[in-house]
Length: 428
Image (cartoon, rainbow, N blue to C red; front, top):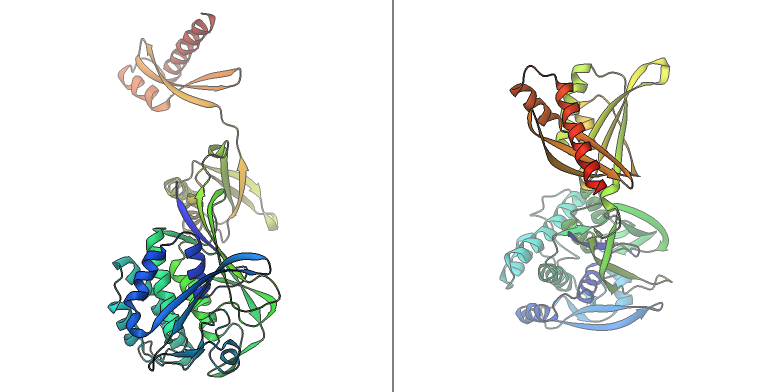
């Protein structure tokens, strides 16, 4: 069964919330300790505590930095929000922002003892932020002076997420949408509207849907959405799934309601009754494709994963005769491939799709001896209904070996023998 990580963005997302949620899911505390031991020379350590946010229990993860070269000197959340970078969720301490270039950030990442997978993920997250900041400021990503992620606590968040994701070993991550606040935030560049430029650029580049809320302030941070963009492999949840485990990472801001990131480990629910009878139907109305185009399209749609394709005459707008194309998909993950084939190989500009259920007779192939040879016959049964259908390819092969007989003669003979044999078995 496929396994997924689902990041539910009902309260937005930030780096520290993601770390806490992954730890609550069962991410290795030992590996996290090893990471911070490795970062000890930078003056980093963390605190982890179970707390409540408006009666919702979860983990609170916080990074502290000490030392004369540290980016933080003390925990002072309110001053941080009034005078420094937009960081509503990730208020680890009071910042004296270190302005690091991407190469300097990569140097910190590369010096950490990470697995190749964790290191690649960390690089990917920083690349996403660098690209977004570069676009916002009109410079190359190599020239970007990191503010938020130049701070050591944000670097620690990204490294921690990379280590924990590597430990959990989940390849597929679902992020459907992220809730965002409204209004303005004060940053090092002055007052900026929510979503701030880096967040908006990442959302646009990686197709992450944002949903505005009435909450005043920033719910989605650049670090948080960069993590979501780097991890996401799917935009939608499986149609049917089972929840294996839930992790709750608490945010720092008081939005007047519970502020948490819920992360879930899901699996496909293959035990749901009659899942094999759940299908998806894709439709398109077409009035300007040639018969030749439609013939090729049918081949391509079958190749994309459809189990059946039909062309049905229909009457379209402006009194035009047209074709209703209907394709049936039994495996949900193939629906997008089939839709792509319809759009690519026909002239339609849209595809409808909807879920449906089908009742299927149980099918079993059996070999039937006839005077034309052994033929394959499909036995179909539903309750007290039983039917026999000789397989097309099998009948064709027998007809080639017995040219004096017609297709229909061979077909009827195979079905008669199969029915007689079944009647005898039932009688016994």
